[in-house]
Length: 179
Figure 1 (cartoon, rainbow, N blue to C red):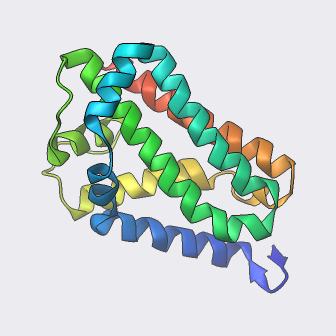
Figure 2 (tube, rainbow, N blue to C red):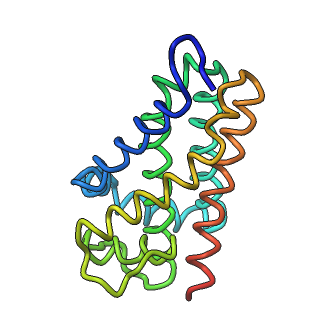
């Protein structure tokens, strides 16, 4: 599929490259910008279900914005949507970890093992570039599966918001069931 000189294949390759860059330090950078004490306070005041729903709605919001304008907003919005989706996934993971253990301070290496298991990545390996690339690939598959449909305005907004919302809810369900 070609639109105004851009092919869907090129867009997918660009997105995949962005994910690979995330596996080279971006995940840790996103993790380091998350306020773990704020997550504890949020879970304590709202409860785990409302906190998870809030994160899912925030993820849906960026999916809607990315899909609403079709190709024009995908080019700019997809990287921002990706960062927001990963941030919300990390927030949900930290919230559920706190809810289950009572500990809100988590080191990145321990945290990433939880993320990898929530995406069914191979967590038997030491956290390495390979595991981070596997996690990036799984997120790409979840996010990218509906990218072409996001090219259609309005329909793309509905798809983008729904996909992001359901992705966060599935991650939360997987983590809760792993208790």
